[in-house]
Length: 279
Image (cartoon, rainbow, N blue to C red; front, side, top):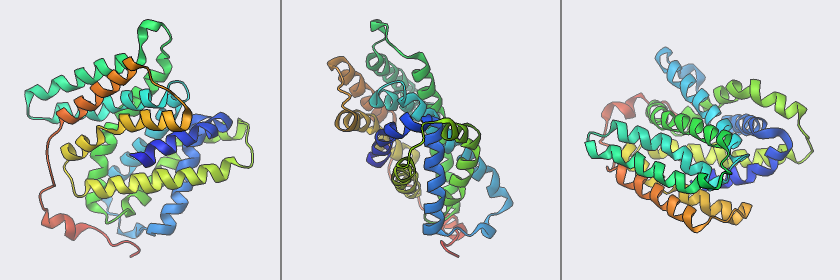
């Protein structure tokens, strides 16, 4: 979570040069290079029934980053993370067998209202909309990541989906790179950010989801909006108001309360069907 939010904060300077979509595409493109060097995925081991999940996860990953960075271009980082978190939180509420779990997305929504402070009349509707779109992608991303992680060992599954993410976002990312204020430092900066996200952060998420239930993972994930506020303050000097701090607290509490669980039950078939890295 720290790697994701640090990467997002560091992306702001690159966004100023080549736009949000251009930055997301560069991150994914450099991610492909790093992941293929590290994981050396066995492409021939991909079965026909694996292809839809790999394609879906790749597209979702690419546009999750694109939508989110477009939101960060317009609204504070912590606010964008809290709004985006409504996606996986809503998925958790809908999937829960407990009827009372559906109240927590509502509490989180109240927290988001406090974060955006619409009564000041300064809310950026486009920024909120892009954050919500990123949230929808985030909810799907969590579900698909666990499925792909169960099929492929280590981060080899990630090394197969990030190329799809780069290709999916190329039509919107490359034009911004070409027409933007491109300077020499953009490429090494984007490469460094790509090491944080998608390589390190998404790799750790995939490894975590191989060992945890969605509910346990989501419970830990609920503190990510707080990390967004913290990194926004330390890196971008975005100081939240007292009302906004109350809002982020409500989001974190809602995320924690909505999800319960522990380690995933052992699956003897999952271990047998994973491929070996570098095979």
